[in-house]
Image (cartoon, helix red, strand yellow):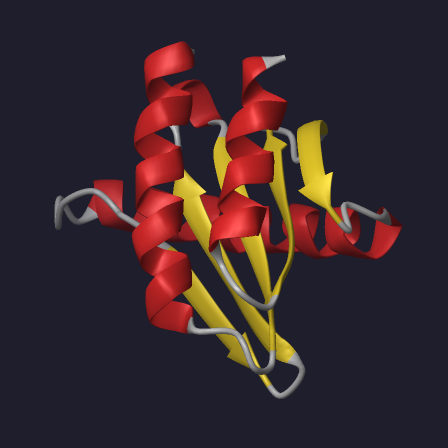
Amino acid sequence: MIYRKILDELVAAVDGSDGALLLDANGEVVEGAGAADERLQLIAAYQGIALGSAQKTSDRYDIGSIEYLLCRYRAGSVILRPLKEGFYLMLALGAQASVAQGLRHSDSARERLDAEM
């Protein structure tokens, strides 16, 4: 599937990435790459709730669309990017991974995923 190829390329392009997931509006995994295990799926679902809340607030106050949500933790970072029709992309980064590299490559992956939807 083309989604898997895009996610595989994203994980390969970002040194220190743990995995990438494509999720639907309900937080269900559509496709995954890297260490797309149960732990990452749970993180992605909870982070998706935060992304949804941020998007509702953005819409309510008409402050523009959200390009990405970045959550940083001691053990690593999570980048979320909204896609068409409520879908979203999650990239999990290890503690030593470059957030800037993750942001750059996840934006390219977002464009490609949106084009395929």
